[in-house]
Amino acid sequence: MTFEHLFGRERLIAAHRGHRAIRPENTLSAFEASIGQCDFVELDVGFSSDGVPIVIHDDSLCRTTDAESVQNFFPPYAVASYPYEMLQALDASAWFLRSDPFGMIEQSDHLREELMRLPVQKIPTLSEVLMLLREHDIPVNIEIKDMRGTLFDASATVKTIEVIRALQMEERVLLSSFNHQYLREAKRIAPQIMRAALQEGAHPKALIAYLKDLDVACYHCDLEITTPEIVRAVIDAGMLANVYTVNSPEEKERMFAWGVKSVFTDFL
Image 1 (cartoon, rainbow, N blue to C red):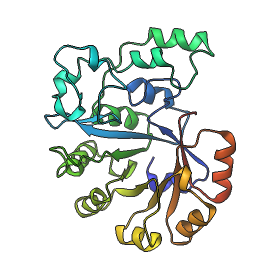
Image 2 (cartoon, one colour):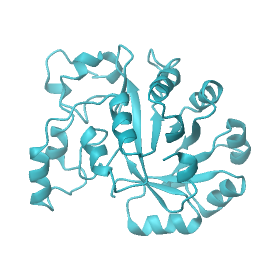
Image 3 (tube, rainbow, N blue to C red):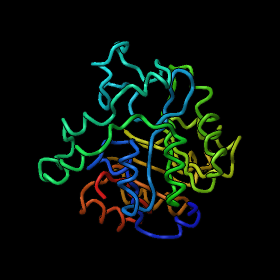
Image 4 (spheres, helix red, strand yellow):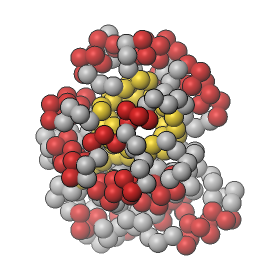
């Protein structure tokens, strides 16, 4: 399904880093668990030191892998400091069973048993995840992580789009980033791929003029800074408002009542 088609619908649910309430985020198991439970998937793309686009949220390996206990990994455990082959030695799932970040495991012995039966999850490549989603005809919002301060600041957008093009998924992808320069570059090199501006903390000054200058289809803003006035202004300007991270049923209903097109949620 293309995003152009999908966005003709209302009250869309986006799986934030996959079904991360019951699976370790941004792993193949999290994306598999989201199939049939959402309208589209959201993921984050970073890079190994040898330039492989990989799916991981943090700049550091500490929270979602066992890097601190693995030989040849050292502080500050930066994702972009290690080649893809080394990253494949890491366990990207044991932390979830241990920490139960959403309190779901303690509520269900069945879930604990399911998780214990799962194979060890690795950090997947962007290509691996896109192939899975393409197989199931699920659109995907790819957030390009802000790579400023790394070797990949100048190439993050190009490398991401190369993978999308290789799999012929241009119409099934929505590109977003907090680094809005990446969106300008994406427009230049792949204008057919839909784009969205991510924002937190505070809205840009002269928001609508700013978004029109960026030439984005969507505005993805933090729930904490979302107001009905902002949503209406974005819609009236011909763009879509999508909000993250919306985890309570009451907040979901409130966002949809305001006219929000999609909510990003950890609970599907």
